[in-house]
Amino acid sequence: MPVFTRSSDASQPGDGVSEAEEEQEGGERAEDGREAAASGPGPAPSRTLLGHRLTRLRAWRTRHPRTARALRLTTTALAAALVVGALLLPNTLPALKAAGFARIPAEAVIGAVVVLALPRRPRLVAAVLYGFGLTALTTVNLLDMGFNEYLGRGFNAALDWDLLPDAQGYVEDTLGGGVATAVTVGAVVLVLLMAAVMVAATIRLTHVLARHRVRATKGALIAGTVWVTCSALGLTLFGGPIASERGAGALKVHAQRTVESLRDEAAFARQSKADTFGNTPPGELLPDLRGKDVIFTFIESYGRSAIEDPVMAPGVDRTLDASTTALEKAGFAARSGWLTSATYGGSSWLGHSTTMSGLWIDNQRRYRTVSAGDHLTLTKAFQKTGAWDTVGVMPGVQKGWPEEKWYGLDKLYDAFDLGYEGPKFSWSTMPDQYALEAFQRQVHGKKRDKPLMSFVILTSSHQPWAPIPKMVGWDELGDGSVFDAIQKAGNKASDVITDTTKSREEYGKSIQYSVTSLTQWLERYGTDDTVLVFLGDHQPIARVSGNGASRDVPVSIVAKDPKVLDKVADWKWTEGLKPERDAPVWKMSSFRDRFLKAFGSTPRPSKG
Image 1 (cartoon, rainbow, N blue to C red):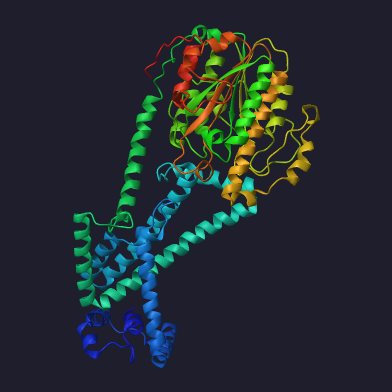
Image 2: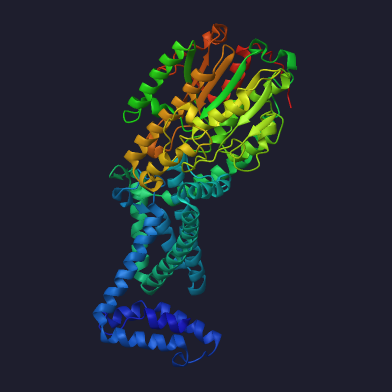
Protein backbone atom coordinates (compact mmCIF):
# COMPACT_ATOMS: atom_id res chain seq x y z
CA MET A 1 0.00 0.00 0.00
CA PRO A 2 2.82 2.53 0.77
CA VAL A 3 4.35 1.76 -2.64
CA PHE A 4 1.01 2.41 -4.36
CA THR A 5 0.51 5.72 -2.52
CA ARG A 6 3.93 7.04 -3.38
CA SER A 7 3.85 5.91 -6.99
CA SER A 8 0.37 7.16 -7.85
CA ASP A 9 0.33 10.42 -5.90
CA ALA A 10 3.90 11.72 -5.99
CA SER A 11 4.46 14.59 -8.42
CA GLN A 12 6.51 13.77 -11.52
CA PRO A 13 8.96 15.98 -13.42
CA GLY A 14 7.08 18.47 -15.47
CA ASP A 15 4.01 18.58 -13.19
CA GLY A 16 4.62 22.21 -12.43
CA VAL A 17 5.09 21.60 -8.67
CA SER A 18 8.31 23.08 -7.27
CA GLU A 19 10.80 21.10 -5.23
CA ALA A 20 10.34 23.52 -2.35
CA GLU A 21 6.61 22.91 -2.36
CA GLU A 22 7.22 19.15 -2.51
CA GLU A 23 9.37 19.41 0.59
CA GLN A 24 6.81 21.62 2.35
CA GLU A 25 3.99 19.19 1.66
CA GLY A 26 5.91 15.95 1.91
CA GLY A 27 4.43 14.88 5.23
CA GLU A 28 2.31 12.23 3.53
CA ARG A 29 5.33 10.45 2.04
CA ALA A 30 7.25 10.63 5.31
CA GLU A 31 4.22 9.19 7.07
CA ASP A 32 3.98 6.40 4.49
CA GLY A 33 7.67 5.68 4.89
CA ARG A 34 7.36 5.28 8.64
CA GLU A 35 4.43 2.88 8.23
CA ALA A 36 6.33 0.92 5.60
CA ALA A 37 9.38 0.61 7.84
CA ALA A 38 7.22 -0.51 10.77
CA SER A 39 5.53 -3.16 8.69
CA GLY A 40 8.81 -4.64 7.45
CA PRO A 41 10.11 -5.26 3.93
CA GLY A 42 7.64 -6.30 1.29
CA PRO A 43 7.93 -7.81 -2.16
CA ALA A 44 9.67 -5.67 -4.74
CA PRO A 45 7.11 -3.80 -6.90
CA SER A 46 8.75 -5.03 -10.09
CA ARG A 47 8.02 -8.60 -9.01
CA THR A 48 4.29 -8.08 -8.58
CA LEU A 49 1.47 -7.38 -11.02
CA LEU A 50 0.79 -4.12 -9.23
CA GLY A 51 4.46 -3.21 -9.48
CA HIS A 52 4.53 -3.81 -13.23
CA ARG A 53 1.46 -1.63 -13.70
CA LEU A 54 2.86 1.16 -11.56
CA THR A 55 6.14 1.05 -13.42
CA ARG A 56 4.33 1.47 -16.73
CA LEU A 57 2.21 4.26 -15.21
CA ARG A 58 5.31 6.14 -14.03
CA ALA A 59 6.86 5.78 -17.45
CA TRP A 60 3.73 7.09 -19.17
CA ARG A 61 3.51 10.05 -16.79
CA THR A 62 7.16 10.86 -17.47
CA ARG A 63 6.58 10.83 -21.23
CA HIS A 64 3.27 12.79 -21.02
CA PRO A 65 3.55 15.13 -18.00
CA ARG A 66 0.95 17.66 -19.15
CA THR A 67 -1.62 15.03 -20.03
CA ALA A 68 -1.00 13.25 -16.73
CA ARG A 69 -1.43 16.47 -14.77
CA ALA A 70 -4.63 17.34 -16.67
CA LEU A 71 -5.97 13.86 -16.02
CA ARG A 72 -5.24 14.11 -12.28
CA LEU A 73 -6.85 17.53 -12.04
CA THR A 74 -9.90 16.36 -13.98
CA THR A 75 -10.28 13.26 -11.81
CA THR A 76 -10.00 15.33 -8.65
CA ALA A 77 -12.51 17.89 -9.93
CA LEU A 78 -14.99 15.15 -10.85
CA ALA A 79 -14.55 13.51 -7.44
CA ALA A 80 -15.18 16.84 -5.71
CA ALA A 81 -18.23 17.54 -7.87
CA LEU A 82 -19.63 14.09 -7.12
CA VAL A 83 -19.21 14.47 -3.36
CA VAL A 84 -20.60 18.01 -3.24
CA GLY A 85 -23.44 17.02 -5.56
CA ALA A 86 -24.39 14.11 -3.31
CA LEU A 87 -24.41 16.39 -0.27
CA LEU A 88 -26.60 19.00 -2.00
CA LEU A 89 -28.91 16.66 -3.93
CA PRO A 90 -32.58 17.53 -3.18
CA ASN A 91 -35.25 14.91 -2.56
CA THR A 92 -37.89 16.18 -4.99
CA LEU A 93 -37.76 16.54 -8.77
CA PRO A 94 -39.07 20.16 -8.84
CA ALA A 95 -36.17 21.19 -6.58
CA LEU A 96 -33.58 19.56 -8.86
CA LYS A 97 -32.14 22.74 -10.38
CA ALA A 98 -28.58 23.86 -11.07
CA ALA A 99 -28.98 26.84 -8.73
CA GLY A 100 -29.57 24.47 -5.84
CA PHE A 101 -25.96 23.27 -6.06
CA ALA A 102 -24.47 26.77 -5.59
CA ARG A 103 -24.05 26.17 -1.87
CA ILE A 104 -21.31 25.42 0.67
CA PRO A 105 -22.09 22.07 2.32
CA ALA A 106 -21.09 21.94 5.98
CA GLU A 107 -20.55 18.19 5.71
CA ALA A 108 -17.78 18.72 3.13
CA VAL A 109 -15.95 21.21 5.35
CA ILE A 110 -16.23 18.94 8.39
CA GLY A 111 -15.10 15.96 6.35
CA ALA A 112 -12.00 17.82 5.19
CA VAL A 113 -11.12 18.81 8.76
CA VAL A 114 -11.48 15.22 9.97
CA VAL A 115 -9.35 13.87 7.12
CA LEU A 116 -6.57 16.36 7.81
CA ALA A 117 -6.52 15.47 11.50
CA LEU A 118 -6.24 11.69 11.08
CA PRO A 119 -3.15 9.57 10.40
CA ARG A 120 -3.03 7.64 7.17
CA ARG A 121 -4.80 4.36 7.92
CA PRO A 122 -7.67 5.81 10.01
CA ARG A 123 -7.96 8.45 7.30
CA LEU A 124 -8.47 5.75 4.66
CA VAL A 125 -11.12 4.05 6.81
CA ALA A 126 -12.89 7.39 7.31
CA ALA A 127 -12.84 8.01 3.55
CA VAL A 128 -14.42 4.62 2.85
CA LEU A 129 -17.12 5.13 5.49
CA TYR A 130 -17.79 8.63 4.17
CA GLY A 131 -18.24 7.18 0.69
CA PHE A 132 -20.73 4.61 1.92
CA GLY A 133 -22.54 7.34 3.85
CA LEU A 134 -22.86 9.41 0.67
CA THR A 135 -24.18 6.32 -1.13
CA ALA A 136 -26.85 5.85 1.53
CA LEU A 137 -27.74 9.56 1.42
CA THR A 138 -28.03 9.57 -2.38
CA THR A 139 -30.10 6.37 -2.38
CA VAL A 140 -32.51 7.79 0.19
CA ASN A 141 -32.83 11.05 -1.76
CA LEU A 142 -33.57 9.16 -4.98
CA LEU A 143 -36.17 7.05 -3.17
CA ASP A 144 -37.67 10.26 -1.81
CA MET A 145 -37.90 11.61 -5.36
CA GLY A 146 -39.73 8.52 -6.53
CA PHE A 147 -42.09 8.41 -3.57
CA ASN A 148 -42.84 12.14 -3.81
CA GLU A 149 -43.48 11.77 -7.54
CA TYR A 150 -45.81 8.79 -7.21
CA LEU A 151 -47.19 8.78 -3.67
CA GLY A 152 -46.95 12.45 -2.73
CA ARG A 153 -44.73 11.78 0.32
CA GLY A 154 -41.18 10.93 1.19
CA PHE A 155 -39.69 7.47 1.65
CA ASN A 156 -40.04 5.97 5.13
CA ALA A 157 -37.22 3.56 5.95
CA ALA A 158 -39.26 1.94 8.73
CA LEU A 159 -42.35 1.26 6.64
CA ASP A 160 -41.78 1.33 2.92
CA TRP A 161 -39.42 -1.55 2.17
CA ASP A 162 -42.54 -3.74 2.05
CA LEU A 163 -43.78 -1.70 -0.93
CA LEU A 164 -40.79 -2.49 -3.14
CA PRO A 165 -42.05 -6.01 -4.05
CA ASP A 166 -45.42 -4.42 -4.91
CA ALA A 167 -43.63 -1.94 -7.16
CA GLN A 168 -41.84 -4.80 -8.89
CA GLY A 169 -45.17 -6.61 -9.32
CA TYR A 170 -46.71 -3.49 -10.83
CA VAL A 171 -43.87 -3.17 -13.36
CA GLU A 172 -44.23 -6.86 -14.20
CA ASP A 173 -47.99 -6.57 -14.76
CA THR A 174 -47.59 -3.36 -16.74
CA LEU A 175 -44.48 -3.86 -18.86
CA GLY A 176 -43.75 -7.58 -18.56
CA GLY A 177 -41.66 -9.92 -16.44
CA GLY A 178 -38.48 -9.32 -18.43
CA VAL A 179 -38.65 -5.58 -17.88
CA ALA A 180 -39.40 -6.05 -14.18
CA THR A 181 -36.37 -8.32 -13.77
CA ALA A 182 -34.18 -5.91 -15.71
CA VAL A 183 -35.33 -2.97 -13.59
CA THR A 184 -34.70 -4.87 -10.35
CA VAL A 185 -31.25 -6.07 -11.39
CA GLY A 186 -30.45 -2.64 -12.80
CA ALA A 187 -31.39 -0.94 -9.53
CA VAL A 188 -29.14 -3.27 -7.51
CA VAL A 189 -26.24 -2.82 -9.93
CA LEU A 190 -26.74 0.95 -9.90
CA VAL A 191 -26.51 1.11 -6.10
CA LEU A 192 -23.38 -1.07 -6.06
CA LEU A 193 -21.78 0.98 -8.83
CA MET A 194 -22.68 4.20 -7.05
CA ALA A 195 -21.09 2.89 -3.85
CA ALA A 196 -17.88 2.00 -5.69
CA VAL A 197 -17.68 5.39 -7.40
CA MET A 198 -18.47 7.30 -4.19
CA VAL A 199 -15.81 5.45 -2.22
CA ALA A 200 -13.27 5.97 -4.99
CA ALA A 201 -14.11 9.69 -5.04
CA THR A 202 -13.72 10.13 -1.29
CA ILE A 203 -10.42 8.21 -1.27
CA ARG A 204 -9.14 10.34 -4.14
CA LEU A 205 -10.01 13.57 -2.33
CA THR A 206 -8.52 12.25 0.90
CA HIS A 207 -5.17 11.59 -0.80
CA VAL A 208 -5.19 15.05 -2.40
CA LEU A 209 -5.92 16.79 0.91
CA ALA A 210 -3.23 14.85 2.73
CA ARG A 211 -0.66 15.45 -0.01
CA HIS A 212 -1.33 19.19 0.06
CA ARG A 213 -1.89 19.39 3.79
CA VAL A 214 -0.83 23.02 4.36
CA ARG A 215 -2.95 24.52 1.59
CA ALA A 216 -5.83 22.15 2.39
CA THR A 217 -5.80 23.23 6.04
CA LYS A 218 -5.92 26.89 5.04
CA GLY A 219 -8.71 26.17 2.55
CA ALA A 220 -10.77 24.27 5.13
CA LEU A 221 -10.34 27.12 7.61
CA ILE A 222 -11.45 29.69 5.04
CA ALA A 223 -14.42 27.57 3.92
CA GLY A 224 -15.48 27.02 7.52
CA THR A 225 -15.26 30.73 8.28
CA VAL A 226 -17.30 31.61 5.19
CA TRP A 227 -19.90 28.97 6.08
CA VAL A 228 -20.30 30.26 9.65
CA THR A 229 -20.53 33.86 8.43
CA CYS A 230 -23.14 33.06 5.78
CA SER A 231 -25.13 31.00 8.27
CA ALA A 232 -25.04 33.69 10.95
CA LEU A 233 -26.05 36.44 8.53
CA GLY A 234 -28.62 34.29 6.72
CA LEU A 235 -27.07 35.04 3.32
CA THR A 236 -28.86 33.53 0.34
CA LEU A 237 -28.12 32.88 -3.32
CA PHE A 238 -30.66 31.92 -5.99
CA GLY A 239 -33.38 31.77 -3.36
CA GLY A 240 -31.58 29.42 -0.96
CA PRO A 241 -29.08 29.66 1.90
CA ILE A 242 -25.41 29.69 0.90
CA ALA A 243 -24.49 27.78 4.06
CA SER A 244 -26.02 24.35 3.54
CA GLU A 245 -26.45 21.38 5.84
CA ARG A 246 -28.71 19.54 3.43
CA GLY A 247 -27.08 16.14 3.84
CA ALA A 248 -27.16 16.10 7.62
CA GLY A 249 -30.66 17.54 7.58
CA ALA A 250 -31.91 14.80 5.26
CA LEU A 251 -30.46 12.05 7.43
CA LYS A 252 -31.91 13.70 10.54
CA VAL A 253 -35.37 13.86 8.95
CA HIS A 254 -35.24 10.19 8.00
CA ALA A 255 -34.01 9.19 11.45
CA GLN A 256 -36.83 11.15 13.10
CA ARG A 257 -39.33 9.69 10.64
CA THR A 258 -38.19 6.18 11.48
CA VAL A 259 -38.36 6.73 15.25
CA GLU A 260 -41.80 8.35 14.99
CA SER A 261 -43.06 5.46 12.86
CA LEU A 262 -41.94 2.90 15.41
CA ARG A 263 -43.63 4.85 18.19
CA ASP A 264 -46.76 5.25 16.08
CA GLU A 265 -47.01 1.51 15.57
CA ALA A 266 -47.38 0.87 19.30
CA ALA A 267 -49.81 3.77 19.79
CA PHE A 268 -51.96 2.71 16.84
CA ALA A 269 -52.16 -0.87 18.12
CA ARG A 270 -53.82 0.51 21.27
CA GLN A 271 -56.02 2.92 19.30
CA SER A 272 -57.34 0.22 16.99
CA LYS A 273 -58.67 -1.80 19.92
CA ALA A 274 -61.09 0.98 20.87
CA ASP A 275 -64.23 1.28 18.75
CA THR A 276 -67.24 3.59 18.90
CA PHE A 277 -69.48 0.74 17.73
CA GLY A 278 -67.48 -2.14 19.19
CA ASN A 279 -70.21 -3.20 21.62
CA THR A 280 -73.24 -2.30 19.52
CA PRO A 281 -75.52 -5.36 19.34
CA PRO A 282 -76.56 -6.63 15.88
CA GLY A 283 -80.12 -5.35 16.21
CA GLU A 284 -78.89 -1.78 16.66
CA LEU A 285 -76.68 -1.72 13.59
CA LEU A 286 -78.02 -0.15 10.35
CA PRO A 287 -81.73 -0.58 11.12
CA ASP A 288 -82.72 2.07 8.56
CA LEU A 289 -81.16 0.12 5.67
CA ARG A 290 -82.85 -3.20 6.35
CA GLY A 291 -84.17 -4.73 3.14
CA LYS A 292 -81.85 -2.68 0.90
CA ASP A 293 -79.22 -4.06 -1.47
CA VAL A 294 -76.21 -1.92 -0.56
CA ILE A 295 -73.14 -1.70 -2.82
CA PHE A 296 -69.86 -0.03 -1.83
CA THR A 297 -67.70 0.53 -4.91
CA PHE A 298 -64.23 2.03 -5.20
CA ILE A 299 -63.10 3.49 -8.53
CA GLU A 300 -59.32 3.27 -8.82
CA SER A 301 -57.44 6.63 -8.69
CA TYR A 302 -60.68 8.64 -8.90
CA GLY A 303 -59.56 11.95 -7.37
CA ARG A 304 -60.49 15.61 -7.22
CA SER A 305 -58.08 16.37 -10.07
CA ALA A 306 -60.26 14.34 -12.44
CA ILE A 307 -63.11 16.79 -11.81
CA GLU A 308 -61.19 20.06 -11.54
CA ASP A 309 -57.99 19.81 -13.60
CA PRO A 310 -58.28 21.77 -16.88
CA VAL A 311 -56.86 18.90 -18.95
CA MET A 312 -58.91 16.06 -17.48
CA ALA A 313 -62.01 17.77 -16.11
CA PRO A 314 -63.90 18.63 -19.32
CA GLY A 315 -64.38 15.00 -20.36
CA VAL A 316 -64.94 13.68 -16.84
CA ASP A 317 -67.41 16.44 -16.00
CA ARG A 318 -69.40 15.73 -19.15
CA THR A 319 -69.53 12.06 -18.19
CA LEU A 320 -70.71 12.86 -14.66
CA ASP A 321 -73.38 15.26 -15.92
CA ALA A 322 -74.60 12.80 -18.56
CA SER A 323 -74.65 9.96 -16.02
CA THR A 324 -76.58 12.08 -13.52
CA THR A 325 -79.20 12.83 -16.17
CA ALA A 326 -79.46 9.19 -17.25
CA LEU A 327 -79.84 8.00 -13.65
CA GLU A 328 -82.53 10.58 -12.98
CA LYS A 329 -84.47 9.28 -15.97
CA ALA A 330 -84.18 5.79 -14.46
CA GLY A 331 -85.60 7.08 -11.17
CA PHE A 332 -82.37 7.48 -9.19
CA ALA A 333 -81.14 10.51 -7.28
CA ALA A 334 -77.61 11.20 -6.07
CA ARG A 335 -75.70 13.29 -3.53
CA SER A 336 -71.94 13.90 -3.68
CA GLY A 337 -69.15 15.29 -1.49
CA TRP A 338 -65.44 14.95 -0.83
CA LEU A 339 -63.29 12.73 1.36
CA THR A 340 -59.61 13.34 2.11
CA SER A 341 -57.82 10.07 1.43
CA ALA A 342 -55.23 8.52 3.72
CA THR A 343 -53.06 7.71 0.69
CA TYR A 344 -51.98 9.34 -2.55
CA GLY A 345 -50.94 8.00 -5.92
CA GLY A 346 -51.12 4.35 -4.91
CA SER A 347 -51.53 1.83 -2.06
CA SER A 348 -55.25 1.68 -2.75
CA TRP A 349 -55.84 -0.78 0.08
CA LEU A 350 -55.01 1.99 2.56
CA GLY A 351 -57.91 4.05 1.19
CA HIS A 352 -60.27 1.06 1.26
CA SER A 353 -59.39 0.14 4.83
CA THR A 354 -59.50 3.74 6.09
CA THR A 355 -63.00 4.22 4.69
CA MET A 356 -64.33 0.96 6.04
CA SER A 357 -62.65 0.92 9.47
CA GLY A 358 -63.03 4.53 10.54
CA LEU A 359 -59.31 4.62 11.39
CA TRP A 360 -56.59 6.62 9.65
CA ILE A 361 -54.54 3.92 7.92
CA ASP A 362 -51.79 5.67 6.00
CA ASN A 363 -49.04 3.06 6.04
CA GLN A 364 -48.52 -0.66 5.64
CA ARG A 365 -47.82 -1.38 9.29
CA ARG A 366 -51.07 0.24 10.38
CA TYR A 367 -52.85 -1.78 7.73
CA ARG A 368 -51.35 -5.04 8.96
CA THR A 369 -52.12 -4.18 12.57
CA VAL A 370 -55.78 -3.31 12.03
CA SER A 371 -56.56 -6.05 9.51
CA ALA A 372 -55.18 -8.66 11.91
CA GLY A 373 -57.54 -7.48 14.66
CA ASP A 374 -61.28 -7.33 15.17
CA HIS A 375 -61.96 -3.60 14.74
CA LEU A 376 -65.43 -3.35 13.16
CA THR A 377 -65.43 -2.47 9.47
CA LEU A 378 -68.47 -0.95 7.82
CA THR A 379 -68.87 -4.01 5.63
CA LYS A 380 -68.56 -6.34 8.63
CA ALA A 381 -71.29 -4.38 10.40
CA PHE A 382 -73.68 -5.64 7.71
CA GLN A 383 -72.51 -9.20 8.27
CA LYS A 384 -72.79 -8.83 12.05
CA THR A 385 -76.49 -7.98 11.81
CA GLY A 386 -77.24 -11.33 10.16
CA ALA A 387 -79.70 -9.46 7.93
CA TRP A 388 -77.53 -9.38 4.79
CA ASP A 389 -75.50 -11.74 2.65
CA THR A 390 -72.10 -10.12 2.15
CA VAL A 391 -69.84 -10.56 -0.89
CA GLY A 392 -66.68 -9.03 -2.30
CA VAL A 393 -66.01 -8.60 -6.03
CA MET A 394 -62.32 -7.86 -6.52
CA PRO A 395 -60.90 -8.47 -9.99
CA GLY A 396 -57.55 -7.08 -8.84
CA VAL A 397 -57.01 -9.86 -6.27
CA GLN A 398 -54.91 -12.65 -7.80
CA LYS A 399 -53.71 -14.53 -4.72
CA GLY A 400 -54.89 -15.49 -1.25
CA TRP A 401 -56.53 -12.56 0.51
CA PRO A 402 -56.99 -13.19 4.25
CA GLU A 403 -58.46 -9.70 4.77
CA GLU A 404 -61.84 -10.95 3.54
CA LYS A 405 -62.56 -12.12 7.09
CA TRP A 406 -61.77 -8.70 8.53
CA TYR A 407 -64.04 -7.10 5.95
CA GLY A 408 -66.83 -9.50 6.91
CA LEU A 409 -67.33 -11.08 3.49
CA ASP A 410 -69.22 -14.37 3.27
CA LYS A 411 -67.87 -14.92 -0.23
CA LEU A 412 -65.07 -13.38 -2.28
CA TYR A 413 -64.97 -13.32 -6.09
CA ASP A 414 -61.40 -12.63 -7.22
CA ALA A 415 -59.81 -12.38 -10.67
CA PHE A 416 -60.18 -16.13 -11.25
CA ASP A 417 -63.81 -16.46 -10.14
CA LEU A 418 -65.50 -14.18 -12.69
CA GLY A 419 -65.16 -16.33 -15.82
CA TYR A 420 -63.08 -13.83 -17.78
CA GLU A 421 -61.29 -15.20 -20.86
CA GLY A 422 -60.31 -11.91 -22.49
CA PRO A 423 -57.00 -10.01 -22.43
CA LYS A 424 -55.51 -8.07 -19.54
CA PHE A 425 -55.44 -4.31 -19.88
CA SER A 426 -51.98 -3.64 -18.46
CA TRP A 427 -52.27 -4.00 -14.66
CA SER A 428 -56.06 -4.43 -14.77
CA THR A 429 -57.08 -8.07 -15.10
CA MET A 430 -60.39 -7.28 -16.82
CA PRO A 431 -62.50 -4.29 -17.91
CA ASP A 432 -64.84 -2.80 -15.31
CA GLN A 433 -67.85 -3.35 -17.55
CA TYR A 434 -67.14 -7.08 -17.66
CA ALA A 435 -66.50 -7.29 -13.89
CA LEU A 436 -69.85 -5.60 -13.20
CA GLU A 437 -71.70 -7.84 -15.63
CA ALA A 438 -70.12 -10.91 -13.99
CA PHE A 439 -71.19 -9.52 -10.61
CA GLN A 440 -74.74 -9.25 -11.93
CA ARG A 441 -74.69 -12.71 -13.47
CA GLN A 442 -73.11 -14.56 -10.56
CA VAL A 443 -74.26 -12.59 -7.54
CA HIS A 444 -76.55 -9.58 -7.76
CA GLY A 445 -79.02 -11.04 -10.25
CA LYS A 446 -79.66 -14.26 -8.34
CA LYS A 447 -82.63 -14.78 -6.06
CA ARG A 448 -81.77 -14.97 -2.39
CA ASP A 449 -83.43 -15.05 1.02
CA LYS A 450 -81.64 -11.94 2.28
CA PRO A 451 -80.70 -8.61 0.75
CA LEU A 452 -77.11 -8.22 -0.41
CA MET A 453 -74.21 -6.07 0.76
CA SER A 454 -71.50 -5.96 -1.89
CA PHE A 455 -67.95 -4.61 -1.73
CA VAL A 456 -66.71 -3.98 -5.30
CA ILE A 457 -63.24 -2.76 -6.32
CA LEU A 458 -62.96 -1.59 -9.95
CA THR A 459 -59.54 -1.53 -11.64
CA SER A 460 -59.73 -0.13 -15.19
CA SER A 461 -58.56 3.33 -14.12
CA HIS A 462 -55.35 1.98 -12.59
CA GLN A 463 -52.12 3.44 -13.93
CA PRO A 464 -50.51 3.40 -16.48
CA TRP A 465 -53.88 4.00 -18.22
CA ALA A 466 -52.93 2.12 -21.35
CA PRO A 467 -54.53 0.38 -23.03
CA ILE A 468 -57.99 1.52 -21.87
CA PRO A 469 -61.10 -0.61 -22.52
CA LYS A 470 -64.07 0.76 -24.44
CA MET A 471 -67.74 0.22 -23.76
CA VAL A 472 -69.42 -2.56 -25.73
CA GLY A 473 -73.01 -3.71 -25.76
CA TRP A 474 -73.91 -5.32 -22.44
CA ASP A 475 -75.37 -8.29 -24.29
CA GLU A 476 -72.09 -8.72 -26.22
CA LEU A 477 -69.77 -9.17 -23.24
CA GLY A 478 -69.82 -12.97 -23.20
CA ASP A 479 -66.62 -14.35 -21.70
CA GLY A 480 -64.68 -11.15 -22.41
CA SER A 481 -62.99 -12.22 -25.63
CA VAL A 482 -64.82 -9.33 -27.33
CA PHE A 483 -62.11 -7.11 -25.82
CA ASP A 484 -59.26 -8.76 -27.76
CA ALA A 485 -59.39 -6.32 -30.66
CA ILE A 486 -59.89 -3.34 -28.33
CA GLN A 487 -56.84 -4.28 -26.30
CA LYS A 488 -54.65 -4.77 -29.37
CA ALA A 489 -55.72 -1.43 -30.84
CA GLY A 490 -55.07 0.48 -27.62
CA ASN A 491 -52.03 2.49 -26.60
CA LYS A 492 -48.95 0.74 -25.30
CA ALA A 493 -48.20 1.27 -21.63
CA SER A 494 -44.58 2.15 -22.44
CA ASP A 495 -45.75 5.00 -24.72
CA VAL A 496 -48.05 6.55 -22.12
CA ILE A 497 -46.09 6.05 -18.91
CA THR A 498 -43.19 8.20 -20.17
CA ASP A 499 -45.34 11.07 -21.46
CA THR A 500 -46.84 13.32 -18.78
CA THR A 501 -49.37 15.04 -21.04
CA LYS A 502 -50.55 11.77 -22.53
CA SER A 503 -50.75 10.18 -19.08
CA ARG A 504 -53.07 12.96 -17.91
CA GLU A 505 -55.26 12.67 -20.99
CA GLU A 506 -55.50 8.88 -20.79
CA TYR A 507 -56.14 8.99 -17.05
CA GLY A 508 -59.15 11.23 -17.66
CA LYS A 509 -60.46 8.81 -20.30
CA SER A 510 -60.08 5.87 -17.92
CA ILE A 511 -62.15 7.63 -15.26
CA GLN A 512 -64.83 8.36 -17.86
CA TYR A 513 -64.87 4.67 -18.76
CA SER A 514 -65.13 3.47 -15.14
CA VAL A 515 -67.87 5.93 -14.21
CA THR A 516 -69.82 5.09 -17.36
CA SER A 517 -69.52 1.35 -16.70
CA LEU A 518 -70.80 1.70 -13.15
CA THR A 519 -73.65 4.10 -13.82
CA GLN A 520 -74.85 2.17 -16.88
CA TRP A 521 -74.82 -1.00 -14.79
CA LEU A 522 -76.97 0.77 -12.19
CA GLU A 523 -79.40 2.02 -14.86
CA ARG A 524 -79.66 -1.48 -16.28
CA TYR A 525 -79.82 -3.59 -13.12
CA GLY A 526 -80.63 -1.28 -10.21
CA THR A 527 -83.93 -1.75 -8.34
CA ASP A 528 -86.06 0.25 -5.96
CA ASP A 529 -84.02 -1.26 -3.11
CA THR A 530 -80.56 -0.61 -4.56
CA VAL A 531 -78.28 1.79 -2.67
CA LEU A 532 -74.93 2.52 -4.33
CA VAL A 533 -72.06 4.29 -2.58
CA PHE A 534 -69.09 4.88 -4.86
CA LEU A 535 -65.89 6.83 -4.35
CA GLY A 536 -62.24 7.09 -5.26
CA ASP A 537 -59.50 5.47 -3.23
CA HIS A 538 -56.88 8.17 -3.86
CA GLN A 539 -55.65 10.81 -6.29
CA PRO A 540 -53.53 9.69 -9.26
CA ILE A 541 -49.75 10.05 -9.06
CA ALA A 542 -48.30 13.55 -8.69
CA ARG A 543 -47.10 13.56 -12.31
CA VAL A 544 -50.78 13.44 -13.31
CA SER A 545 -52.62 15.22 -10.50
CA GLY A 546 -49.97 17.93 -10.23
CA ASN A 547 -47.49 18.83 -7.50
CA GLY A 548 -49.25 20.17 -4.43
CA ALA A 549 -52.62 18.65 -5.37
CA SER A 550 -55.00 17.81 -2.54
CA ARG A 551 -55.70 14.27 -1.36
CA ASP A 552 -59.45 14.68 -1.88
CA VAL A 553 -61.56 12.09 -3.69
CA PRO A 554 -65.22 12.33 -4.77
CA VAL A 555 -67.85 10.24 -2.99
CA SER A 556 -71.47 9.74 -4.09
CA ILE A 557 -74.52 7.96 -2.72
CA VAL A 558 -77.23 6.95 -5.21
CA ALA A 559 -80.68 5.50 -4.52
CA LYS A 560 -84.26 5.41 -5.81
CA ASP A 561 -85.88 5.46 -2.38
CA PRO A 562 -86.01 9.14 -1.30
CA LYS A 563 -85.96 8.06 2.36
CA VAL A 564 -82.37 6.90 1.90
CA LEU A 565 -81.17 10.33 0.79
CA ASP A 566 -83.30 12.01 3.44
CA LYS A 567 -81.14 10.25 6.04
CA VAL A 568 -78.06 12.08 4.75
CA ALA A 569 -79.68 15.45 4.10
CA ASP A 570 -77.72 17.07 6.94
CA TRP A 571 -74.47 16.11 5.21
CA LYS A 572 -75.09 19.06 2.86
CA TRP A 573 -73.72 17.17 -0.13
CA THR A 574 -74.19 18.40 -3.71
CA GLU A 575 -77.10 17.05 -5.76
CA GLY A 576 -75.94 14.80 -8.60
CA LEU A 577 -72.72 12.88 -9.18
CA LYS A 578 -70.37 15.87 -9.41
CA PRO A 579 -69.58 17.51 -6.06
CA GLU A 580 -69.25 21.26 -6.09
CA ARG A 581 -65.82 22.70 -5.44
CA ASP A 582 -66.98 23.96 -2.02
CA ALA A 583 -68.93 20.84 -1.04
CA PRO A 584 -68.13 19.47 2.45
CA VAL A 585 -64.73 17.78 2.82
CA TRP A 586 -64.36 15.07 5.48
CA LYS A 587 -61.44 12.93 6.48
CA MET A 588 -61.90 9.53 4.90
CA SER A 589 -61.67 7.94 8.35
CA SER A 590 -64.82 9.76 9.48
CA PHE A 591 -67.07 8.15 6.86
CA ARG A 592 -67.75 4.88 8.69
CA ASP A 593 -69.16 6.49 11.83
CA ARG A 594 -71.15 9.10 9.90
CA PHE A 595 -72.70 6.42 7.71
CA LEU A 596 -73.55 4.12 10.62
CA LYS A 597 -75.15 6.96 12.59
CA ALA A 598 -77.06 8.29 9.57
CA PHE A 599 -78.78 4.94 9.13
CA GLY A 600 -79.80 4.45 12.73
CA SER A 601 -76.88 2.64 14.36
CA THR A 602 -76.44 3.16 18.10
CA PRO A 603 -72.89 3.88 19.32
CA ARG A 604 -71.84 1.53 22.12
CA PRO A 605 -68.09 1.94 22.51
CA SER A 606 -65.54 -0.71 23.36
CA LYS A 607 -62.36 0.44 25.07
CA GLY A 608 -60.19 -2.39 23.86
